[in-house]
Amino acid sequence: MPDAPEEIPSAVQPLPVLTDVAVEPELRAPPGTSARARSPWEIAWLRFKRHKVAIASLVILVIITLLAIFASVISRYNVHTPDLAHALEGPNGKHWFGTDNTGRDVFSRVLHGGRISLLVGVSVALWSGIFGTFVGALAGFYGRWVDQLLMRITDLFLAIPFLVVLILASSLLSGSVFEIILILSLFFWMPAARIIRGTVLSLKEKEFVEAARASGASNARIIVLHILPNALGPIIVITTLNVAAAILTESALSFLGFGVQPPTPSWGNLLQAARGFTLLAPWMVWFPGLFILITVLAVNFLGDGLRDALDPHQELRAREQ
Image 1 (tube, rainbow, N blue to C red):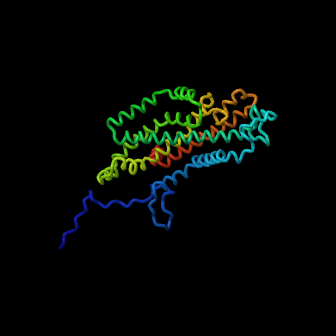
Image 2: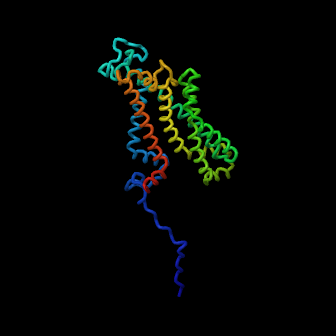
Image 3: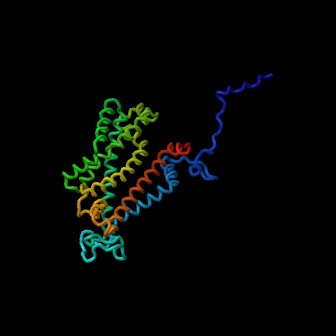
């Protein structure tokens, strides 16, 4: 009589079949269809769409950007030509945002000022993000003395009271848009460098990096083609948030008289020009300030949405709390 089959040891018992109970509803395959592997960017987009505030912020930013780009088409008045006969008029059918102390249309000046403020914000965020990513990637990947040197330089820049240095540097220069972008970029790369360094320190220990090394890939190839694509999430988020910070900083500098100089309008120097008319013509303060407020809030909410979409662990931590 044959022996009864031996019982399979518990250590090698067949694994239970996993169900999709814990899978987010929007990431499941529709009923009646075969499952299809989604790319990380598809999953991030599905998560981002659930963030209603971020979607609304994105729409608002697109509208503000289009208004600034097509300001010359939308506005009917020249932003530099004074009209003393209509000075300090309140908002009305002809001048939606009223006029300033020389009769110039505030609506037109706000739209044209948005061009400069958005250009400064986006340019500073891009240039500082690129440089900060370069420094952080080198420090995190090579470590040792390279990491120590680059991080001590980063700490040195963080210790400098940058607003004072910005004011001194701006006072020595002509205040052109290019100079403001350059000065701000020099003091906005440090947070990106520290965040990317931490991300690279984690990624360089992963199996795909070891596989790339084993296949003979150079260090530059590993950083550019393997590590940085997997660090795009933090890079996008910090770059987005730097847009808001750069707009606020440029507005503060221009308000103090050290930023973009007239006759070029920006939201900051529009507020600076309205300082003496706060009670007499408050609309000169309301509308530039309102555009700054809405833009900065929208950028911050968009950054929150991107962070939640690109970092699934952030959402899991929030659910656990």
